[in-house]
Image 1: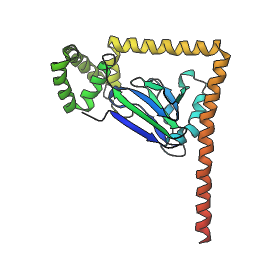
Image 2 (image 1 turned 120 degrees about the horizontal axis):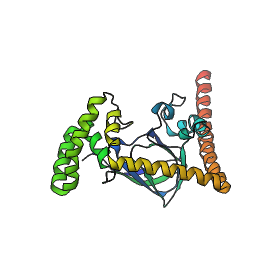
Image 3 (image 1 turned 90 degrees about the vertical axis):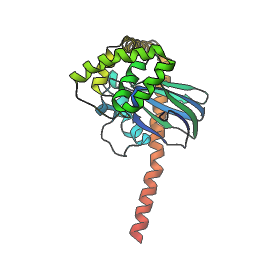
Image 4 (image 1 turned 60 degrees about the vertical axis):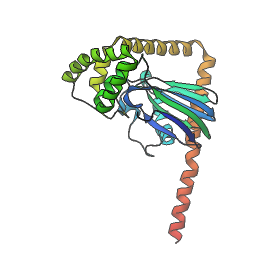
Length: 252
């Protein structure tokens, strides 16, 4: 099968640029050492909002320095990131389809895995069959042998996928975004509807919790400020090194 489980070691200022995990899979990340700063966005936030053109290239630290401050102060609450400081011993869960970017605040060691469960099977199956047809056939055969209920679900999703493909021709890379036809097909499944309803309830609950608890709000603001501070501070040595190299070349 495809790579799906990793041992991750990262130095300070490293991380992963904002992305969506492939094939609609969810993921967990267990942190063994260090601290990570996460920023997450729901699937319905447009790509151009979370991946605007900015200075610094496709690096997590550049994203936190240039993009994060704008989105954290956005007038649109839906475009504000869910910010989390992950400590050693904690495990992060990333739902399928969610945008996320991670910055290592110091040297970190983690174990992470992408997975498909009964809950997100419909979305994963539709994306896998579209972008990895050979692998999907092998998966379907294994489901027939070991997971007959999921195998029966693939039969039902064949009709759903056909209807979705007829109404949509757009597509994109599975590692960065989901296709609109897959989204329309997955939207018809009860599991997807329930998942989105839970996400909306959780979002409203977090909003009410922040309004009710000023102390929690201040704590979250401090965590956000810490991420921004690290991103700005750690870029200064890079700028100084670049200026030093420039002066040395001019003297030569």
